[in-house]
Length: 309
Ligand code: BDR
Ligand code: CA
Image 1 (tube, rainbow, N blue to C red):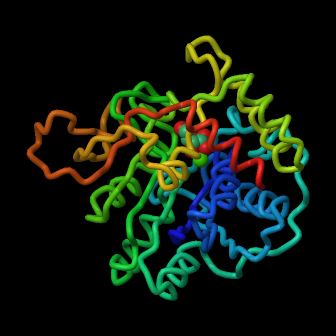
Image 2 (image 1 turned 180 degrees about the horizontal axis):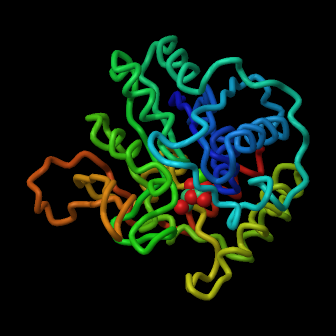
Image 3 (image 1 turned 45 degrees about the vertical axis):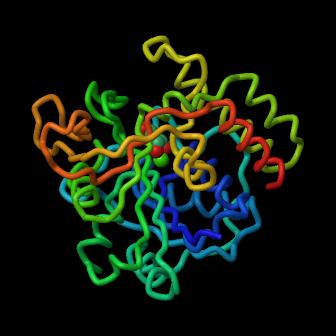
């Protein structure tokens, strides 16, 4: 199996990404680290521990990371994810403790100890990953690629130009995109096509195991925010699991290779991922950008895997 580390800010869709990763034999999840984003750092860490407790995977090392973005104050998305960061389902209290080290140190240790390069998946703001790259440059060869949920080639969901994860810590995102490591980006172009519909939620509920019940309740809550007319969605875009699904079955996705940079200063465009679609900068592509998804195959994969969780 492919070794991965998940840096996340659970968050409803982060939680489902974590569940999908652990239910997939193609992947070996070596560590989970948490970023501040959807909720405060204390809450996202606690939520990761609660999901792993539900999955009876207290063997996975977990560590909390940076408490705020590199140069800015933290913005949280409690309007989307609620007071706890995972409102909706009943979740167990954590039955194990996080590691007594910073997320960056847990990632560094995991990379150091791995005999093969490890894929880093990041589904929250990129603060921890930027800190890792700047403080442990010697570990770059141990990173196979960085797969992120963030940004877009032409959309925004927090401002007209910016997606939430990138908007929270654009300086960190720019460091990560310009690191020279192979980048894979699940931005809003693809995640807005990865929508879960009400009938899909019923498929999860009918699986009838404790994890599937939680997934259905998570999705019910997540759906509420996305019902607002301004989005024009039929369901809820399941952003973060696109990263894991791409690792499991890349053939479900349509991707392009492009140069991507992050706007850190624009008047209207802070936190925008600038995707050089037509090669106008002559910069060599640095990112595999997901643009489209076979939605039905994605939902079927999720249902199949949650059925085994
Ligand atoms: C991203 O922001 C968060 O609210 C979600 O968990 C996802 O990572 C979508 O913009
Ligand atoms: Ca997230």
